[in-house]
Image (cartoon, rainbow, N blue to C red; front, side, top):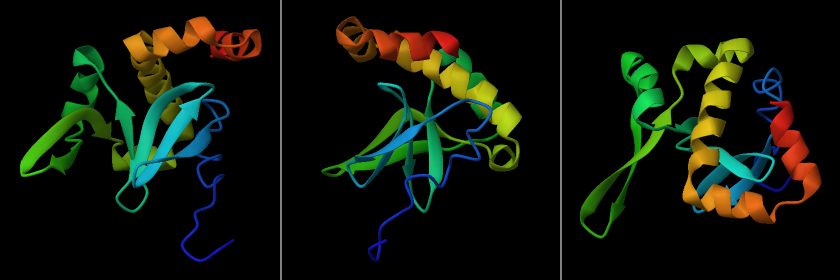
Length: 130
């Protein structure tokens, strides 16, 4: 592996109860994909962030998870992507529940709905299994 490159399978054990994921480059980090849907991202030394909505954010807030933030010019942008609670890095079974919730949120987004209409039958079948 080239210097600075990251193992594309380093989270396979962590997501074993959820199902297969793929990591793809995403700006300065990586996106976590379940099929064609991005459910999470990895930034800041392998911190995982999941897509949230008003309902799923409650569990993250209860765990004191931090939102992913970045600067756009001088403006600090706070996203709806929240860090995975530290305890879930050791609990693939519970992480799978959080990942399924993130998948539902991501699938409900207008971008994902548009992609789903164009997706192959195999991709749609994979999503139904979760």
